[in-house]
Length: 218
Image (cartoon, rainbow, N blue to C red; front, side):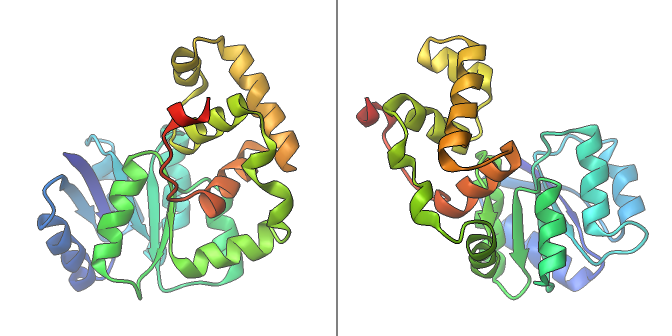
């Protein structure tokens, strides 16, 4: 079961999410809170797979709470939910490495889909957020397609997209960790990306739902 912790100061909305989750057969809510400080106290005592934070909560807002949680667990899988689609808020959220951003105008079923997607090591963004990311981070996307990569680099790119660490990729390919890291740097260079965060954003916007048989990429 996927263990989820929810933070939202609107009880009715929070209960609506929980109701939708209860209808799934693979997700369970292990805790909930209405503000940032309460959430931190609870999270310290729990084992959580995916976090769901409203941005506009008291004491610590959702972005500040996400930052605190990621200081404790850099690999934390966090989804932000909000009515806000302002550019400055989106940029701040993306810069701290959140795995998902959903607008509250979407259905609770979208949130359930997001939880499953993020748990699988991928990313999930509302269409409005994805459009913003494409326009602002990758205006000339034709120059940054994975077809320019070697077959090995393509294979590694898909493994990265699926959330695998260098050590895990090395085992799958029968290679060394340092070799995988070198490939990852070469991939970023070929795609015109300077940082791993930019690579994450690239994958989030251009390869969010690709299903590929990696054995076909030999």
